[in-house]
Length: 188
Image 1 (cartoon, rainbow, N blue to C red):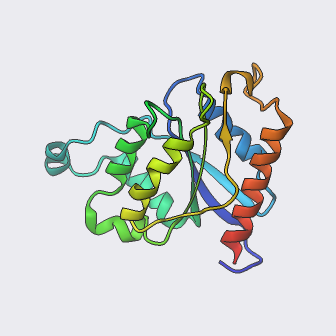
Image 2 (tube, rainbow, N blue to C red):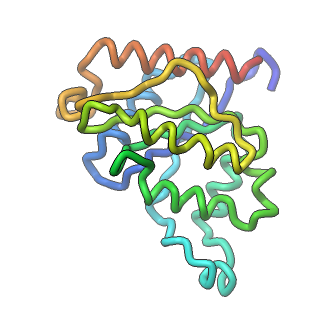
């Protein structure tokens, strides 16, 4: 990518819940992204539970193959993660497990891929532990977790209005800063 090009990243919410605060945060990221950054939202809803027997019998499911190709073609990833039981969410870990199959495909999909993390939780932790739990996962896949300014939305039930928009200006500013600095990082 040259410095004049727009960066494209794939944004994934780690929650399947219809009223997910993390999905709301991802949608707001799309709206708040700087002009030089395009976020393409991807869904993991159609991913089955990972089962090596299913993988051996039928191969990688089509929704997984399609997302693998999109990630491989993108400049980076934006993972918007909930925090469950002080760690990462199972549904998103399941998706990453599928996306890393077959293992020979890991370098094409994840090798050197820049990954930005953000998240929202109902509690006071703001997904600090979940984001930390992702570090060894992405490191094992050869991806690079970007250490830029974090976004940890605490008490998410108060952070969004009924339409899913961020109501707290400090959170909005943190998202804007996070995306602007990530876009600059991708362009260099």
